[in-house]
Length: 256
Ligand SMILES: [Zn+2]
Image (cartoon, rainbow, N blue to C red):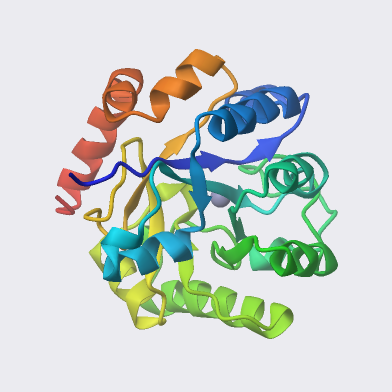
């Protein structure tokens, strides 16, 4: 039977957030409890790059795989999440907005007002096994751009990361989970092997490589909610409305 692969999606890990980011801000205590839960229940975290690579050798996929992803590259990953991941020896993937690395200026209005990691911090987490991968250069809705601009956002973010960090970048995450067929084609063209969407659904090795389903872990989730999100039925129940909306949007774009 095909193994379920929950791909968890986090943004900021912090005690407090301004009201509009509260939902997507998980506290350090919640995060620690969630990682402890994964450890106690024998989950094996893998990176998105590893997940993509297991497609070629499905039988090697560990039992109870889970993918832990973070979007945007906030410094609170380095300060709050990373020590906990290190404690358990957990792999993770970090999707960085290359134009905002080292940035302490106010974030664009649709991002949380939190400083971003520096190149030195990114080098350090990458050396310790965190996959540092691309999330565009300026956090744009790729499906709204001209092909030329879209291509630049994807290829340029990959190239900057590779130049600054010295390792090949093989995966990508769509800002706002927004993509269409042309965006997927461009990501593949740039030499990337997989891309994360949102979709509020369980993933597995048969999932769409350039639109992997992710599950957003929210501030209002209890530990019991978190546990149920690791199951196919639990994700379906918890995100019924989100999934319906995501599906309508994908149908409108002829993605399904
Ligand atoms: Zn983002």
